[in-house]
Amino acid sequence: MIRMKKIIRIAVGVILILLGFIALVTPLSPGSWLILVGLELLGLRILLQDKLLAWAKAHPSSVSAKIICRFLRIREHDGE
Image 1 (spheres, rainbow, N blue to C red):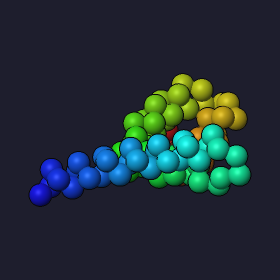
Image 2: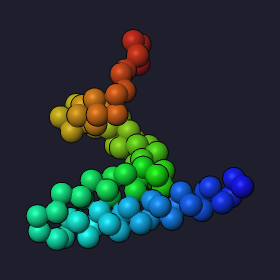
Image 3: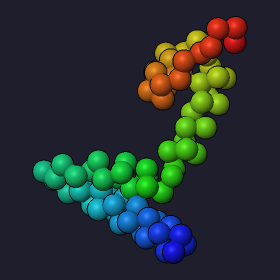
């Protein structure tokens, strides 16, 4: 049962990404946000979050790193 739920989740995620891409390339179609929902279902946010955090830690003084940290709601602890 758990395996079936995982397969359904992956299938729905891929379908949403494809629909979002089609909405992105067609004019006057506001459905491109489906790409983000599909990526979230596939769990790619976790992978991207780790890579973005590593980049932000490598470039702590850049404006982009500050935006990434705020976007991911990560606050530096005192003493770090």
